Image 1 (cartoon, rainbow, N blue to C red):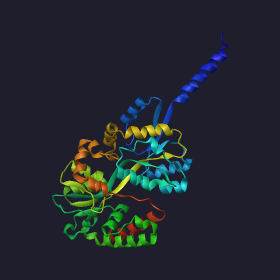
Image 2 (image 1 turned 90 degrees about the vertical axis):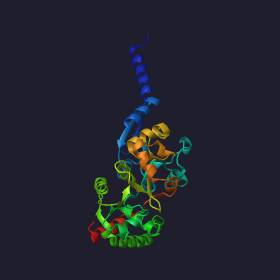
Image 3 (image 1 turned 180 degrees about the vertical axis):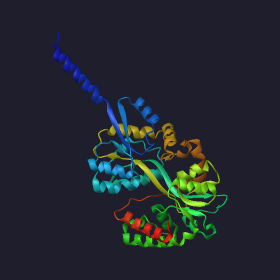
Image 4 (image 1 turned 45 degrees about the horizontal axis):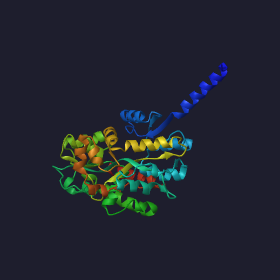
Length: 356
């Protein structure tokens, strides 16, 4: 007969083994990017993995990972333009092993865009997940010819357009004026010159603006009431309004809609890489993309993503985007130090001159 203490030790050892085999995948992600039904399905498929979710945003993700040197989480989802500079400055991420991710069903334009933005010393630090755009919205029964950023300032729409005084309208107006603001990021004196021209253009546009919107509800009310016929907008706002009035559509600007892409990236001191790769491949499977898109309202970075949207979103997206429009996207570029301050001062100049 074994001594009692030997039996206790053996049981403790078995308990330790059982605990060690259970792994926790700690997600640092956006609200709605880890819906309960999808987490439950993942845990049922991988019963040895528990998913722990922390909802966040770009600024908080950087702050949390910076504070810990990249510890505390196994998979993060920063936007594609918020990785390169943060990695160079804070060393909070580690490269991906692309051989462990099924990239074959990803939209090549989006995959290549993210890889280009997040490659450091030949190593790729992120792949795409969800994406959306900023561009234009128009009531096509009243502004059928609206096609570019500059059209918001066309005299025939005097007092009938809107925009938000944030960096998006600076960038869009720069493209409309034949400039490439992202290329100018490497020469900040040149970029300041572009911003000065953009400021003059938007100040001169004052009489066209019914009101400068600050939130989606403000903008929606003006569009649905007919107070305005067109505006700069997020695509998601236009999609919601399309469900109420099919004349209101998202219009990708002729120079290209400005695209954001939320990614998958590995924090430098994450401990569950294999579980993280499983999550990435799981949520990008077509049947799971449908569930994710129903939660986020955005499109996944996979081929045929429009057809995997909920029905109410699918019609709005198909009314807005052709395949050519997707190929014409302008991805937000990595933001070098100093640029946001320059843009902020330009916006303050425009606000002071327009009462925005």
